[in-house]
Image (cartoon, rainbow over all chains, first blue to last red; front, top):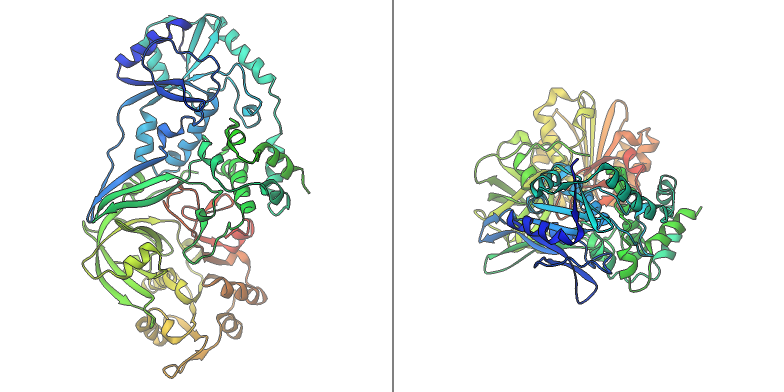
Length: 337
Length: 285
């Protein structure tokens, strides 16, 4: 795959080129709370102090709330497929990985979601390697890493005053070709990657998941689930900040026969999620629901797709109002009988 | 993990209902809490289906409900759904509809009764209450392909005579040489001259034989709970017995994430499972 070199200070030039090529460009910016992706208005892309955006990039493909069809009496029309190319620069490897995992659900099973895929296929992710992970980061424990290219279109590595950009998908390849910049040397690229490998080394995996995974499932009925979920208040914050939580609810909104059918993020940690019309609820207790969240991330999804659905970004650890920590939960349950 | 989807439109626009029209409504039970809805697609037949599958019925302004398909593909273009009025938004609104009303259908969804395993073998259908709907689809299907299957035995029970579904058909089946029907009600009334008793008891008294047979059991959890030990005593193996599960669902296509039992999604991996398969899953349903 192609790799190019630009001066870090010339990144704006590259982004302007992308804009000229029809991309809406988004970059991390300081927001009221932490960081958020915002439309790039030109000028230096200042990532000083940036690690993760609060909300990640999931919403760019799967908005928190969207109308997927509208109806007028009995006539239903699908929402138009999203158009418009978007380039996101400064995406972290964990967030790109998360989107690639959600793709499996919305594309790879065979049912193709036009709204999700329209946005996904029109997005170009320029993924920024992580030089300084937070104490809540654990990507190396779940298959990712600070220089992981899974789900990226272009990987960006900082190397002194230079920025090395390597294509990680055919879309990324095309983009870099059009950018017409200096080619990066193999040696330079290797050296830049080595610095991220060093960062990864300092993040020793918390578990050997191949061993832990069957223990989590094997301990399905363990009391430890009650213990780890005892503080949980079923607020759903962990699922809303999670870059790979893909579940949604559906509701019709309208008046006098006209309206929209909406889908919006939902949370398996909340009781109505599985409540039957009969009143029966297979996951009535919060320990059952927290177990569902952990096993979906670490066992069920892996059983179906061969990957963990947790990307180790640590957002749920940060967002939880009562300090439930999914890392501790996995460790504790796996350690049980 | 990818699966074969026979309805191309569903594969490309999985959440878009196909417009259909309500042709007629049949009130099935004395309490009128179950009605059968006969629907026809507005633009001609849309897709093929097999017994055991379900569809999402959509009413704009109310939402969607996943309902088993009670008709058999051998019965022609009309699709039939027998729906219990749960007093939820969608089923309540459905129950108020008159012929001519517009209803959206998304389907066919889910897997089917295990037809390949059943071909050439004896088929035993054990149903209780209003869970009989996709079993009716199967019985009609077998009767239309009678030579492909060996003996067909049906046990069907309801709380009262007035709670039995498809009464005119049951009367036909009782006389038919093509199948053996054991009808029972928990408690009869002045109209009832048939059997009284619970489904597990009937299964035990009739000594339903497991030889070269597949059983399909659907009904209230309590009925299934007491029937399975009886079948075990009669020599049935878990891999011979299938059931169809219900879960809260939204999308029906494995995306919305709420109908899983362990790693299996009832909407795409089910709703039909053998008890052998279920024995390997968490008891969380």
